[in-house]
Image (tube, rainbow, N blue to C red; front, side, top):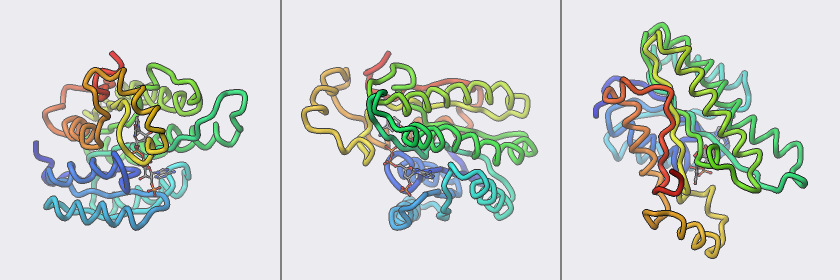
Length: 247
Ligand code: NAP
């Protein structure tokens, strides 16, 4: 799969799944803009790994929940490279809690980052892709968008919203040959899931037919495929990457 001469933006590229996606896209030849919100050191490490994979890229800081900052940053990178071919909406956060104790701000912040953030990025990138008559948008949703999860009402709602966004944009942008898909990872070993106790992990592992947690690279491989020419007839789909945990 080659992405030679393609320009990609990966939100939340500083760590976890986003970092692997940056490395895989860059390894296939894309120039990758590595977005992050706070952690510049981690973003620089992703850039180093991109270079190690023989690729090139640049780090770019903005908070996807901030409409103006996102629009300005994406307009600037489109000006710099003259195009944008691949947008991976991966930035995400969780603030778990049971419904009756969930604070308004924990509901709002998770929706703002995970769902509204993706909307901001899609809106900022779509016009250039429409003019180019081609592009790929890949939204990182979650298994819990489909299954639900106690204690994650805000997170699951945001990720389910991403699936609605994906399918609507797939229909809206198809006439310009822009494919929009989502991946729905199961339990992936990253900072986001590191707070789990050993006992919680063991319990979840019992329900995973492939008997292991996923790696960021398991997800990145699917994102790479969806970004490639090989996936040119796939749009509006949600691809589970979960070891069989949810079928
Ligand atoms: P992670 O290791 O916690 O990394 C989160 C990334 O998102 C970081 O790069 C972070 O940047 C960035 N980010 C957070 N808020 C942001 C904002 N407002 N603006 C820009 N960037 C922001 O998470 P992960 O596990 O790799 O998850 C990546 C995506 O996969 C998320 O959307 C998550 O919901 C989804 N997912 C994860 C799992 C899993 O089991 N891990 C399962 C299903 C879905 P900084 O480094 O600057 O903080």
